[in-house]
Image 1: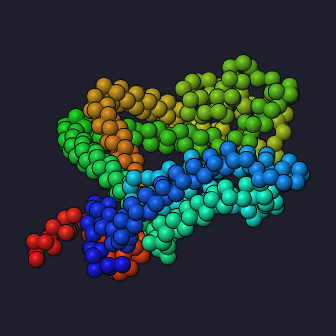
Image 2: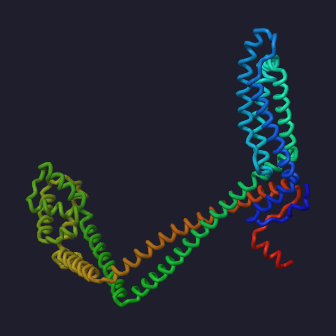
Image 3: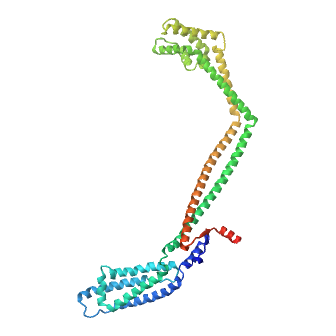
Amino acid sequence: MGKEEIPSAVVFDEIDIWLEIASKSLFRGLSANAEQLYEEIRKTRERLKQNISELQDAEPIEDVPTPIAKIGLPSRDKMVKHLYSVTEKMLIPTQTDYKTVLSFYRVTTPSIIEFAFAFGKSKSSKNLYYVRSLFPDEIKEVLADLKRLNALLNQLIAPIKGKESRIMNLERVPEIVREIKNLKSGIEKEKEKVRGQEEECSALEKRILREEERLSAIEEREEWVRFKELETELAASEKELNALESAARELFSPINKALSLLKKQDETGRHTLAPEERRALASILSSPIRALGDEDGVRDFLLAMKKIIEEGDFILKERKRDETLKWIKHLLNANTENTEFSFASIKEKRAGLESRIEETKSTLSNLTVLKDRTEVERGIISDKGQLAQLQERTDRSKRHIISLQEKVAEKERVLLEALESVAGKKIEVVQKQKQKQKQKQK
């Protein structure tokens, strides 16, 4: 096959040239053989046409039984029609490469085989017998032409016989090459996408860095320092107010049970409180510190409650009754002594703390530094979110590139196997750049 004539190395982008060389080497002499046989086939076809025409116009021999003539004549017409169809399908090509030869053989041979089945080896072979009985000389010529055509077609395909696997690989290679090129094109597009994504990531990272520097500058401003101080003051005041509220609740906790019982008895009508006393009771139970805003009302309520308990109509166990009265007296005395737990003192402290808290919040709301800082922070958060999404897309693209590269490697392996099957020896596929480097080294 002239393996030495088939190059052992081939540039990927020039595989089509390599295939031409390999094809010529594999099918040496095919062209000259095909040209000669094409002419023979053409002559035989023309002779067949002439013989078909003679068969069509021929008169049957004499003394043939009527039944044979009755079947033979229609069969002759059917045979003629079929034979003309065979000659019309026999389009002799001008090119002599293996693909053209193989295609011509595959198209033409079935027509002849079809005729053989229709008028020879099939169940209807008696038709051929009847036609031969009527037109023996004409049928003999036609069958000889067909036999000659079949022999010529076999001679035409002879140089290709036994090389089916190589032919199959010759025909596979261009499609494999196209698939590899498509995959490589996809890789380049994906790499271009990755480059664009990485540029966007870099721009976002720089913008985030600038915004973080801007945030640091805001936090170094005197206005921000003042803002943090006010926030600390606000937290301290709110903590102090909470502690005062807790102290107010603790102040009334020893008599909570009696207060709840009195509320229930007022609701059931056992004891009827005055409207102002009812309001004071509800206020103490819900928020003692707010109830102390009306210190006189609370004091009057406690005196009224003390009287109810002392009169004995209030349902309390003796021990609990004494403890409740004792604590009510303690509250009234503490209030008159103007201690830190007096109603007036707690009321004053609460008013002062609430005023301070309100003033601090007002001052904070007038400072624009928080708005500036919030906008910068929001921008940083948004940019970091975009960056995370972009990095995830970039990672997906990189994984896709790896997947495509693996497919390319597998296709290149298949390509190499096909080329080596065609050449019958080891083949090296190189890229153009690599080939140029090898030539320089030589």
